[in-house]
Length: 111
Image 1: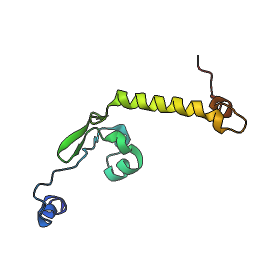
Image 2 (image 1 turned 90 degrees about the vertical axis):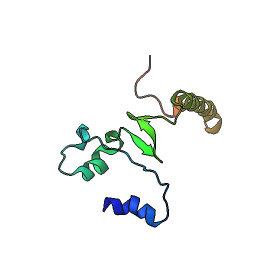
Image 3 (image 1 turned 60 degrees about the horizontal axis):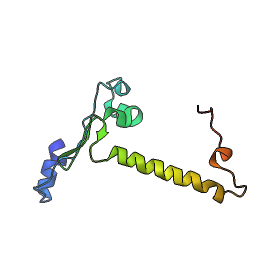
Image 4 (image 1 turned 45 degrees about the vertical axis):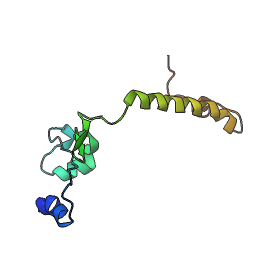
């Protein structure tokens, strides 16, 4: 059945150069327990936490839960810059000219 849905199906469609997209599931992940119903555990409990590696078009794009195709530090820089721009624009958009911290105070003070 697996062969019919993958390689044989690809051959039937004339796709001889197809490469695998797959994500092995870590069955030792505590959120995958109990092992009696793997699909239920993956869909309702473990989600992405049970996935350590992902291969797309035959190329590994996630290794040990780290996305290999993403510049993590560059992405964080862009996120922080966007947050700063958003913070700077809040009072101009608020009728009472409040800052974001005045609109939504922190739960606990940051020291």
